[in-house]
Image (cartoon, rainbow over all chains, first blue to last red; front, side):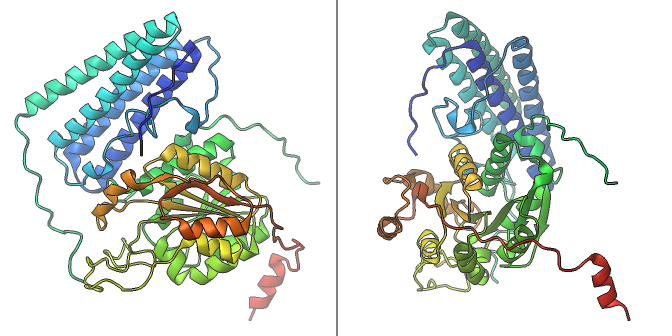
Length: 176
Length: 281
């Protein structure tokens, strides 16, 4: 599918709804990934995705605090001004890169990809919104997401070189 | 005297509030996750009370959907989801009935129910997660698998059989709403499901849902899908022609028409005590 440039976000409430949706969807996606990895006994990666979900939840709480006293508009899922089919931190990634055998290194790379997309969304709003207030808040949030990106890069560096994915002892195409 | 129950407006629910506590056992990367997300977003958007929603399924990977949704659900018999759902809708017309399943469940063993559900036009939504394979039983060709797909040991030279064309067959059988969505576009799919639930009558949503385990080639789908070049039409002749030209990758509402809904008169003919009497020895 083609990826169109995101339309501009014009008001603080509209921006905060987008930010809240981004963080909620991110948290829910990480939590679902964690559950799925736990089902497949990939405990280490499940823990990692849980940590990522907690980080997104914390970010969502910050957005809620910023929205205090404001009346936020209700936006239909398909009317969000994303540049890709879903919110930046969960879409436009290759789902096929997610595997029950994925290593912590691969999971961190996936998370890094997502966080960079989140940061870029906020940076895009910070540079494109006609509202000075929106640009200012989005700029702050881009910085915060940038900190997540840096943190993930540190974690990846701590992990060292990519470890080899374990062998699948029950491959999908066994003879019937 | 019957108790008076005051109507209390339900609090605003988010999509995650419609997700159950059960963890999906689908393979990571499975398209069905996006369908689950789209269904819960649609329910939240429509602000449907959980107790007014029932999700009915058959057997297969996709048929696990009811377990993951907070609401009423029935994980039924292979291919019989539409039969069970029709019975439920007949008895409880006030419920929003969603039927979920896959291409094997819906178009092979359940193919006959599919045809008659289309022509019966009861007010329900049928979501088929088509991954062109029987995934739960480890990867056999389904009715929508390409004839030359050779990766199953059961059909090492492919099935050699032309594929089932779900939207065209739904149209021919009398469905009043036909749409196609893609798991890679969860928000677009949400819109289609919302439209389908709102549609008065039988609404068929054909979802291209990649199977990363048995059909890794589905990763190309995201480059192949495209918006339907024609808007929704209510003209069956036009829809038929367009569906014949369809490459199977066109997304959107393909056909929508107001047709009479079949809903039986709901008069009680027996009480539980009568049934009890029937079984008394």
